[in-house]
Length: 356
Image (cartoon, rainbow, N blue to C red; front, side, top):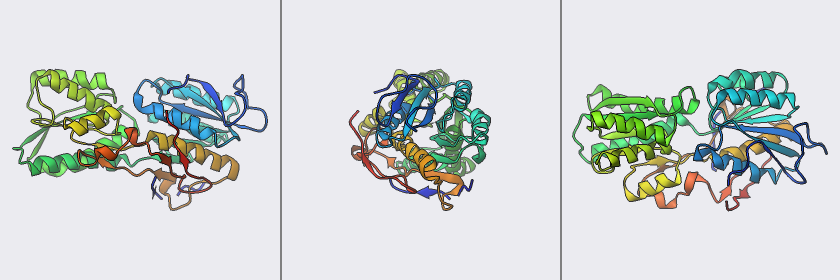
């Protein structure tokens, strides 16, 4: 299938493994639905992390507009091996499509096998390791995100004459996930000139698995040994919040002597940005990603339409906004808009977002 150029265009929890139909009653088994509905599996990392819940909400809402689809939501509970099992189950149950939020790249072979057996795959938020393992990827440019959050922080430290060298702690996400890899790469791109000229010294660079509690533990243990940290770069807001708690417990004033940046526009982090304890975050809309994924799957199944060639590698990129104290009042939690703009290709229309 032709995969084609990045398109950068504008834009509670339900029980795991439940069916939701575009209209009518839910089926009572996992076989292909009756009435010519297409069974689509939505396999995602799961509800354990708050970030992923808007994805399931979006799939529920989008399904109402696509009565030809019956979507089964499957919570992988953060397990890549479970996702592999779920992908194989989808194929065995004659699913017509899979919307996949990969835990990490180890699910690539299973997704690739599904594609070989004629089951289209739309990956969201995190990508698989090969474009032959999916038809479409919908998400942000995580390298750019990592650069944005870090570059702003470095400019801030410079403009406020914070003495150098700045000791920087980096909290990475889930090892092996495209999100963690790319956000770290973006952060390092921003940091490298400062490292080269001696203005930055990286004192900690460790995975906290995108988890608040893990980030708090790692930072607490580090601060007990060395409290001389000027900047904490967390690859998501969940880890930023953990770092903020660790700093508070250590008697260090976040936003005064140590600065923390995150990503995803998690509601609690938006509050922290507003009150000055977190320096920045970056919007990353899981709701729009999942909503567009349903539209993309409908385009494949109903119209045989893939992203045109001006979307590099079938990548549909969601725009991002750097969020600081200056604009935080205009940003909704998780970057969810009031109206979801249409998928930027094929057959789609904009829809209002229902209140959760």
